[in-house]
Every structure is written in structure tokens, then in C-alpha cells.
Image 1 (cartoon, one colour):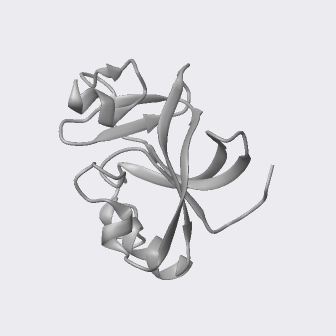
Image 2 (cartoon, one colour; image 1 turned 45 degrees about the horizontal axis):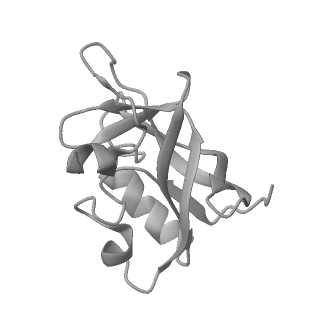
Length: 135
């Protein structure tokens, strides 16, 4: 497994086609490495999903290399509501987890895990938020 601190796994609104694609939000500051997957399950939070890792399943997403790491992570922490100045409790937590790219490479990437309430939050069985939105 490659140990990189500059990779990010996105699975919801930041995916291409997700409404706020990372590559358009940070033009020239991110490089898409490809599609991938990680262990966990998605919860439907309305207009966006939340990834929980203590449930069986696989979550589909995209992996990006961040060329302006600190700047991008600070902006994303604010967007996800988990920056140091964000009100508590935080709905998300940024952590590093194992991700497998579709070409078989295994990497470690930053990902935002959902830490909010699960009651009434339906599971997205496919683990692919974009496929669920299209279907």
C-alpha cells in the first residue's frame, strides 16, 4: 500500500457529476487518479451521502491527488463542517483509510466519515451515490 498524505477519496457531492465536483472547485490544484472503492456503507442524508465504516459493504468513489494539500483540506474541512472553528458536534470527521483503485493499486487517502445520527438515515445498498441518484 502506498503511503501518501496527499490523496483524497470522495464519494458524494465532490465526485464528477455530484453537483460540486472537486476538479471544478479546485481547478489546476487536483489530479484525478481514477475510480476506486473502500470498505463501509453509505447513508442517504438527503441531498448528500454519509460514509460509515462500521457497516459491511463497499463504497464507490474517486481518488484525487491534492497539489495544494493544506489549502484544499482546510477548505474541505470548512465545507464538511469539521474545521476547528465549526460548531460541534461535527457531522463528519476527516481520517485516512485504505482505498483500492479500479486498476488494483491500493493507496491510503483522506476521506470524510459520517459521525452524525443514523436513525432514519436509509442505507444506499449499491454503495454508489451517483448511481443511486441516476436510478
